[in-house]
Length: 399
Picture 1 (cartoon, rainbow, N blue to C red):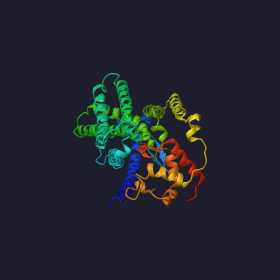
Picture 2 (picture 1 turned 30 degrees about the vertical axis):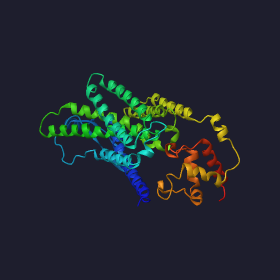
Picture 3 (picture 1 turned 120 degrees about the horizontal axis):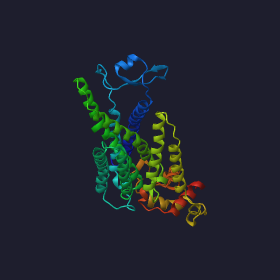
Picture 4 (picture 1 turned 60 degrees about the vertical axis):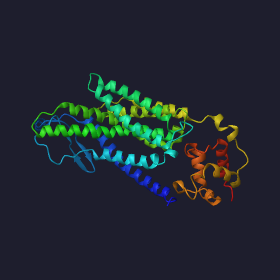
């Protein structure tokens, strides 16, 4: 049964990740569409539409059909019963994301959350700290919006305070958890705030507005203002969250000594690029924003590039080709702990010469090229040992 557990967890990881991407596409697509739609509406010229209270409309063509969405300034004469509510996409994205986070990170905290070279803590402590980031992220962000969001110039104050908090949280996460986990936790923290915005503010505000309309009362405009503010925040959070979710595939970002700064700069670049598209929907083509975003990304890429001196260091200099006999002790000491008959992580075993040869490509890719294995370098593999593995793979050493 124990040997089946990693296999079962891999399937849970695969299916949850797949479902998370599907519902995430639905949520982000709807969010992006409405930001575009809201900024692309034109005042109607038809007196009939004006008399009905339509404040903006748009004509579009897609799939051979014509569409004419209309936005009312206040309430229509009669509110239909079959209103579509955009909230299950947000809730499903958070639920599947949290389930995936639980299966992969919380359930394997010792492997995925903890890097004892960064901060030594017990698995239970790491789990509680990770969950605290999600809760605290929402509580602090929501408090900032409540206190300053409705004041004069409140949007700028909120943006500045949220930025300060995200910077502090990112720095702290990267000094508590493994780099890979820290990036994901910051993304999950922002994603939690996005979903909580929908759950606590956007949907309840819309329900109150509609209830007032159906009762023949004038809705309190504050509900629409709050919902609009939180929706705008969500659209700026989206691209940083997407990068954080994808970052675990690119170790050069989260393994850097200043990984917290790397994450912040890439998130900044994504916000700048998103700003360009938001303004573009309003008919404003300000190329300064995407140019600044690209410059930031190029700067980060240059900053992270390996130096020639490191590439040609004595430990990685070309040497005699390595044989299977040379790399077996390395694999036994650094890899077999997680890839054996009892615990075949990712359904991969490396506890025999045949298994090593069968997984040569994966060993080279994960341990030499990407340097993501061993996870968080828990077994202390050295650069010289990685170089030995690389020489063996390139020589295709015979058994």
